[in-house]
Length: 486
Image (cartoon, rainbow, N blue to C red; front, side):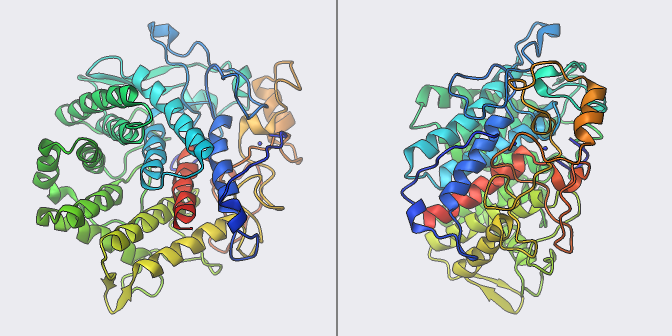
């Protein structure tokens, strides 16, 4: 993982869905059910720890089985967040929140798809619970990122230091603590009917983590330069309080939100670092649903975000590439595109659900249908309707990235090449290889094209060729939105 950034399976899997028959593979409509299944499958390729017997991504093996042992705590499991072998708790929590939000908003009729989605959520929430070892202790990173990034090794061969990083009362980190609280609160809603006991456990940890985050405030810096807080921690506190209010309905969280509404600000991104519009979108539904006038500022800020995205808006701030892709910045840009698109879908659903005619963006007016239609163009671009005629989801369509910046994908599977591949050998033989990755990391969304819609598919070009869990999680939300609408 690099600053502000983000990293394949020869096994062929047959997907089935009742929705698939309703989709065509024309230039303007794709098999969204297939794409959704693959987007979820990606998470199995990112797993750390002891793999289960029903593991579908068969080129992966067990890894990092001693994580936490140096401090007598079990920190196995969770996800490698990108193409490296470090477990960063902060972006992992954001990933969980997005996957849970998708599950809550668009409970799929396809039973197996929902089961796979909840399995993906639980793989991370189990880890977050283990990392929360006391009311004021949370392990936030496993692995020395600097040492890891000097090596090119499969997770199964990893021999770089598994250094442990944690926050506590004397060394706080409000952002990851609050983000973990948000993740567990969101997941508690997702599991409320399918596993009530687990849901209750998640909520207990969430409340404790929120108290820790709020009462021991301090900005997080342990992951720098890889995950540094640029937006401060107020967005994470509002994000967590919003999810806790949604999960519990308890007035203390609503009071917290309204008494701190001055923190809310209009933004132009939704990312692992900046959650303001996520909270604002949740609170917009509360504003309409229960006519809570004291949430009007959050609704206004959410509308501002939508206006900043929509082409034709007099207040548009995020422009599109010549091919029509929302382009925020040249650092794994698809993380911002997928995040924004997920918000646009949910916001349009809120307008429709509450019979709101639309929103005004200066002289332009946008209905829920128009917002949704624009969001769909972003999904279709990523799936192949773009100047490169390339899908930016690995394994989807006929043309997709073949040289991911991803260690495990780029080195033959340990089940094929059982000999250890060392740090330098991996770099010379595989990182620098001109050949496609031997393992197809099905479902992975890469960083995407540049501002001119060009994509070079080079392993060394991590800003464009590395996948991340949170990019995939946001895309899961957008694909689920399209399927739910059908």
